[in-house]
Length: 244
Image (cartoon, rainbow, N blue to C red):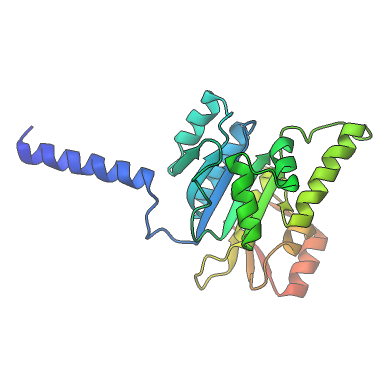
């Protein structure tokens, strides 16, 4: 390999590494940050990857210091910068329009509700809520307690306390579409594109959660749109169509 060819290879590798570590300023969409609790597993990481694939500019992912090494390796494979560790000197990235917390643990939710900001996850979520930034979360480890027990009532109380702070709870599968609905891309199109997959369901609640200004829901072929969802979409002037 000649010196010129070697230089070209080195430059290409450097560009790829930089692009992986620092999201491009040319990427479409407003910046989004992600918080992952220690118990967040593969499904939560996939939800982050799906948000990135849908065009959301995820600028940073914060992971708890207690997250297992295997899970951290999955997060490190995402094309985004990762911050790992306890609180201290690592505030929420500037300019983010939304913070997403897939599989937020009961422990981190309780810390957020109590204002105990001793880990990076609750700190970022608190900072976001204090500055009017949208926070979307799905319930994770600790929330899966059988109904009727005293512990279930405690978990429900923590969830309600987070809601009062402004956390918008969604099922994990609904986070990408909820993020699309709540965070405008800044472009002329206000269409919400649902990801492809089996058993895609468009519900009335999903339509109700769309931000003002949404004009269209584009679902994959084979998706089921409930009658109530169609009725509400019609009243709101939102077109629902299936892509081929």
